[in-house]
Length: 347
Ligand SMILES: *Cc1c(COP(=O)(O)O)cnc(C)c1O
Image 1 (cartoon, rainbow, N blue to C red):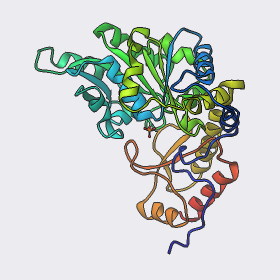
Image 2: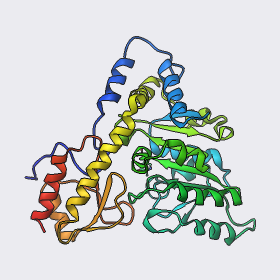
Image 3: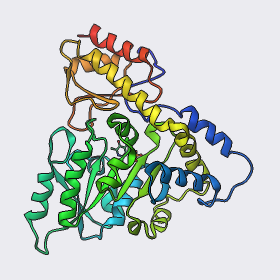
Image 4: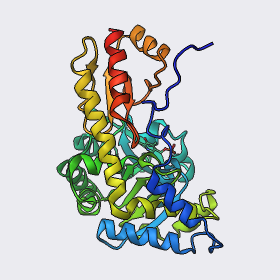
């Protein structure tokens, strides 16, 4: 029997959190009468229009159930089966999608790049492209960046542009895994266009789930040519929701009055508070710069075990190891203080 206290909120992942009020209310509002199916409804049109307003450009928008599908299908839209996708060695597309990018692209190979703090070192792109140019090597065709990264760090505008420069030089397309894009925007204080199409991003997978929605990600194509027949790709992959309004309505709710950004700002602020507390605790070492809503800490294994016995849930398999404490839209200061107090007590 586990005698650990049950906790209402945890630090394991932002997908442990429930649905935030703005998304919930929009869902309730969408739940009236009948609406056209498969994305022909007004909620889906509105959500796509609001995303175009947010990014201040023409773009094609599709809604999928999850991030694995959004990433895999959008990467597949950029590549032929004999191509390769360059990404950081810790990237979700490599480590946490069970080979889906390769599967949905019929074999496009994912090639790994090094780089400190979870970010691609642009020199690695150059090396990987130049390493081989013969017909026996899977031809590099796309770069996938995670914004923010698997270790909680955020690419600056300049860093994305440095990657873009190499993409342009070598004819590579630029994909952004934005499972936590909202937190990245909140962290940088930029407008969404500055770290996407104005920095060369061809397609963005904009995460809704971890931002506070029940389910769903938006695939945003700034490169309109790549969006051609993407609807068929979604359908074939089982990602075309028949009651699409329930995938799209939460976006309408979240995009209204900037709720998406405020929820992300709050999660980031809770992580900043946790970082501040952890910095004062002996034997708890910050592993990466804390820039958004994830805090990575090195803890002695016994201490991590005791923390788990005290009822806390957190991950220790993400990125490059260490304990990951993730704040969500609903994390409260008292949650952070209770965790910090237990960390202190167990030191
Ligand atoms: C959560 C996450 C995804 C999406 O994962 P799904 O479980 O498929 O929704 C994609 N990329 C990153 C970096 C993530 O953290």
